[in-house]
Image (cartoon, rainbow, N blue to C red; front, side, top):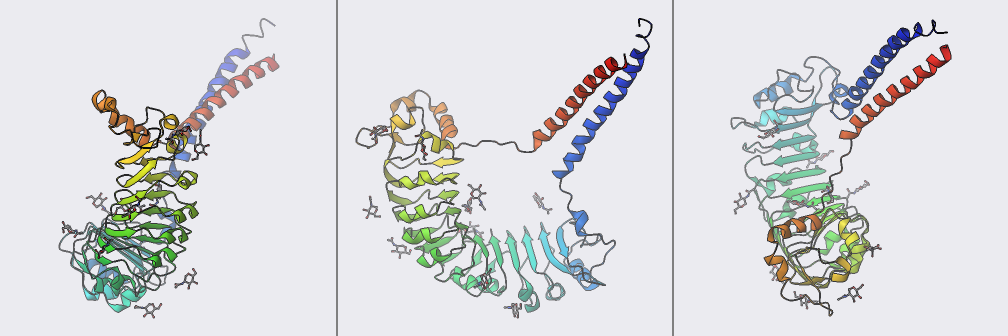
Length: 431
Ligand SMILES: *[C@@H]1O[C@H](CO)[C@@H](O)[C@H](O)[C@H]1NC(C)=O
Ligand SMILES: *[C@@H]1O[C@H](CO)[C@@H](O)[C@H](O)[C@H]1NC(C)=O
Ligand SMILES: *[C@@H]1O[C@H](CO)[C@@H](O)[C@H](O)[C@H]1NC(C)=O
Ligand SMILES: *[C@@H]1O[C@H](CO)[C@@H](O)[C@H](O)[C@H]1NC(C)=O
Ligand SMILES: *[C@@H]1O[C@H](CO)[C@@H](O)[C@H](O)[C@H]1NC(C)=O
Ligand SMILES: *[C@@H]1O[C@H](CO)[C@@H](O)[C@H](O)[C@H]1NC(C)=O
Ligand SMILES: *[C@@H]1O[C@H](CO)[C@@H](O)[C@H](O)[C@H]1NC(C)=O
Ligand SMILES: *[C@@H]1O[C@H](CO)[C@@H](O)[C@H](O)[C@H]1NC(C)=O
Ligand SMILES: *[C@@H]1O[C@H](CO)[C@@H](O)[C@H](O)[C@H]1NC(C)=O
Ligand SMILES: *[C@@H]1O[C@H](CO)[C@@H](O)[C@H](O)[C@H]1NC(C)=O
């Protein structure tokens, strides 16, 4: 037996090394195979066709717009334009075109746009070129139009010709119009509209298309009240009317917007209470009513909104006792109630460390008038950082990044351990 023992050990060590290296290489190959899921590589499926197969007329039109066509525009995004094409034979046609970061010498021409009338989606991003009247062949096909910081000035009449669009996005471009109505009234298929930071003036439309799911008219000069007709859009998921000059009260029918998830009416001149009907919107995730002149007490039903992640009631005239406990506040990503001089919090519910920008209540539910002198004098700097911690809870949730590495290492290590156990057993069994 003693002479037998030294014989298998070099063999075993050799086997061990061999299997170890195999285990390491499998562990190493696991991370690269899981990595491509995070690095996008969809273009392979979109363009199986080689060399330019685009309609030569459209190719010339792109060239006249100064869009480099050295690569096939139908293949993945060339330098300054992202395009999509149909699969027609013998020539493909453009269905979608995005012009971004154009140089000043790019000019739109009627001939070019006529040749491009197969487009259903046309997008301008950072292209400060002069707009021209689109040919009717193009406007009748367009389903989606985007203009962000592009086309210099637009008029309501110009936009109103895009009557077949389902999606309209105009942002950071000045629009001259009497109001949004002239733009939107004729768009019978509209699902989604953004006209933000356009200096648009006038009143909100009285008529809205029932299928609207998305309305963003933020950052304009819109005035007057929020029309009740707007609260009849039962498919509306997101409504943003922030940073305008809207006044009067929030319609009591706001709770009829039964699909609503994100609502911002912030930075207007709205007054009166938070309507009770808002309680009928359990799907609400984002409620921003900050910087208005809203008054009354903060309704209890808000604490029962299970989906709520963002709540801003700051800079208003609310009064009374804040109806929230620490659990509720910590469950929110953003919570603001500061700058409501008659609002206070219950010290025995929220404790003393809380910094919400409002005073604690006395036993009558009124703010203890001089806001705690301690906070102001002793730790002014930590005051603001505490406030950040409590009122603006931003939990960073790491999703896929580290878990893949951990998985790879775990698989590698466990296979090594498994192999060692296996080899020990093997050596015993061989003896
Ligand atoms: C346009 O320019 C901005 C900044 O100048 C850059 O971040 C962006 O990636 C550019 N877009 C394209 C499509 O080149
Ligand atoms: C909208 O599209 C239809 C065809 O789908 C077309 O007949 C009509 O002229 C278009 N409207 C406008 C204003 O271009
Ligand atoms: C809106 O008007 C203000 C001044 O009235 C101006 O500074 C701003 O550039 C305008 N915005 C746009 C997008 O034209
Ligand atoms: C709204 O959408 C439904 C189905 O999605 C459609 O049948 C209806 O015609 C649309 N209504 C309008 C006014 O576009
Ligand atoms: C609301 O604004 C409109 C238009 O600016 C004005 O005519 C009206 O008097 C305002 N209403 C209130 C209650 O301030
Ligand atoms: C509303 O629009 C503003 C900018 O115009 C943006 O900062 C804000 O996040 C938007 N809010 C919602 C709820 O969409
Ligand atoms: C809606 O609000 C939630 C919570 O603030 C936010 O995460 C999400 O991005 C918003 N959705 C849109 C489309 O603005
Ligand atoms: C809220 O403000 C309005 C005026 O904008 C006033 O008539 C009303 O009495 C106030 N309500 C409360 C509860 O303070
Ligand atoms: C805190 O308030 C929530 C409702 O927002 C309630 O469900 C929960 O039981 C309360 N927690 C405590 C500790 O009182
Ligand atoms: C604060 O909460 C305590 C305990 O829930 C309660 O007894 C007290 O009445 C509350 N104070 C005010 C001012 O609401």
